[in-house]
Length: 164
Image (cartoon, rainbow, N blue to C red):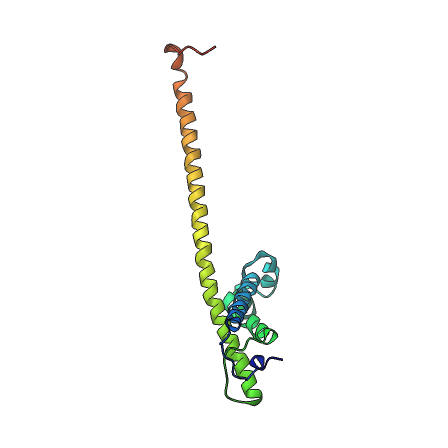
């Protein structure tokens, strides 16, 4: 086992792979917590826990809260311990796990904000497209209505000859 991955050991980010792993685990934490707290597939679970009306339901409905629990599980499973702790023994192991999990959670929160901006930008584009489509449809309806209003008067006016 890699000694840099042991809880309580000093970890250096001399390798880009360590930094990549930190960001990758944070992205996974963000994705899982977002899915659990926002997607329709987990709505029955959130409702069963009481939704946002109960303490337990709120914890399952808040992406930031849920990301803590997900990080507490994923950090030891992935061996992502970027926070060196100089205290030895089990207290050092627990502190390294706890601090590393908090760091992963904070990075996941930043990712969530970035993705929120991306979603908002995409939503803005979709709203503009819908607005333009509605505007075109409205113009077509108005044009047809005007044409219908003008057509009774048309028999009085001479029509241009139709090509053969």
